[in-house]
Length: 101
Ligand SMILES: [Zn+2]
Image 1 (cartoon, rainbow, N blue to C red):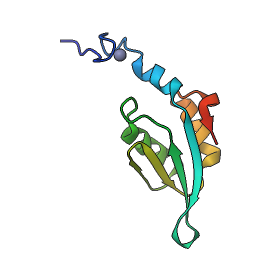
Image 2 (image 1 turned 45 degrees about the vertical axis):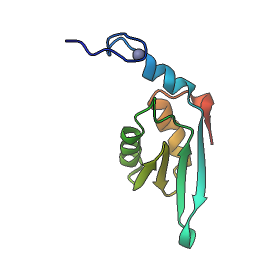
Image 3 (image 1 turned 30 degrees about the vertical axis):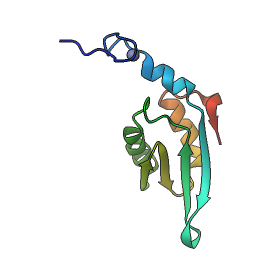
Image 4 (image 1 turned 90 degrees about the horizontal axis):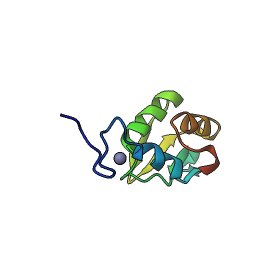
């Protein structure tokens, strides 16, 4: 029994919806300062309906070796990871020109 995509009706292994969605996301990366001057990297603009934000958060946390959370499609990583995020997101299939740092 093949799983099919609810959006395009193709079997999951042929479905390009995730890939297309990734290319269309306009991502904003911002640094915010929290209490006691603690810096966090905020990644905004992801569509939680189209992207597995939870899985992406876990991946980024591992790659940056930092703590972090995600809420309503916004990823928050502890520390300043701007220099890494672009490379990591590009490696995940996001379009570099859509990543605004
Ligand atoms: Zn699909």
